[in-house]
Amino acid sequence: MIYKIPLFDLNFDEKEEQAVLDVLRSKWISTGPKTAEFEGIFAEMLKVDHAVALSNCTVALHLALKLVGVKENDEVICPSLTFVATCNAIRYLNAIPVFADVKSMIDLTIDPDDLECKITAKTKAIVVMHYGGFACDMDRIMNIAKKHNLKVVEDACHGPLSEYKGKKLGTIGDVGCFSFFSNKNISTGEGGMLVTNNNAYFERAKLLRSHGMTSMSYERSGGHSTEYDVIELGFNYRMDDIRSAIGIVQLNKLEIDLDKRKEIRQMYLNELKGIENIIIPFEDYKEFSSNYIFPIVLKNSDIIKRDNVRKKLAEEGIQTSIHYPAVHRFSIYKDFYTELKITDYIVNNEITLPMYSNLKEHQVKTISNILKDIV
Ligand SMILES: *Cc1c(COP(=O)(O)O)cnc(C)c1O
Image (spheres, rainbow, N blue to C red):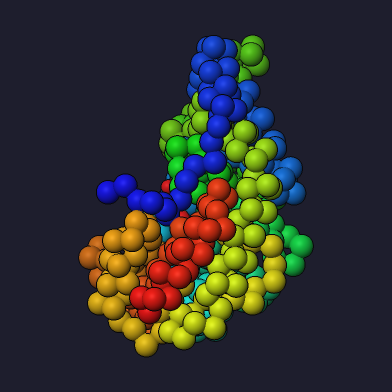
């Protein structure tokens, strides 16, 4: 089905095409100078010491948890209202995901009170996810982590340049992870970034992304060394220069893109405010957000009503999505099931409306008016 208004649209033009062409013609297409440049710009924009480009965010989360020392049978507290990769990364290390609920129907980020209740002697780390680019309660979470000697990994996939009390999301915990999958704020097809202010984590992340080898082929080709040792069981989690070149162009566009998204969010707020039966999460949020998505939650509703609303929007040519089906209800997570009252309501009643920088005011009005009629 071709939608009149899609959920998302790429912010691509000739600049991305030219950047790819330049890399192809340079003949260095794997990890090399463009990747180093991409990492440098990303770290500078986030005001963080180190950035390591990786093949996607799922592997960034895997490495992040490994870096902070998560091991088999350790418990890691995480949200269930997230993309499954957040929790799969815990399972890759044979650690145990312990699901915590979100704060409220308005604040869809992990609830520090529920989180703290779930800490045991086996808890090693917390993974937070900044839903939609809206910050988790990081002051409280970092305090809890300090008190119980836990590490904090930020899944900041939704939040490049989003802020929390003057800091960029992803730079507050021990390690931050970003995704450049095609529908994210920064799109390179596949791609990810790990950021940290910890020098040891940075060195080990570079080692682990390339088989645990002490040098990469790009460094060897530059004459830095001709031999290498393998000192740890690593992976091939590298980003290539073709994608990094696209990433650099996307970073150049990011601030303008996010300003437009901010305006679009305001248009939605103006149109949807005061409609009975619609809750707008983060309605009075004040910090700068990347506005990765625009979620709404239906009041006095259930999954059948929600799916019906989505169906009617689709019939009008408007594409929507759900962020997210609850991870704790997936078949492979049945051994880790726990009741999460607010998450359970959200996953059955949330609808994600179209959001991208090129969305026009008249389109926001169309979507809002149709939605009003339906609910
Ligand atoms: C997209 C996403 C991921 C996974 O990122 P990939 O780059 O596709 O591996 C993980 N967590 C969240 C919250 C995401 O939105």
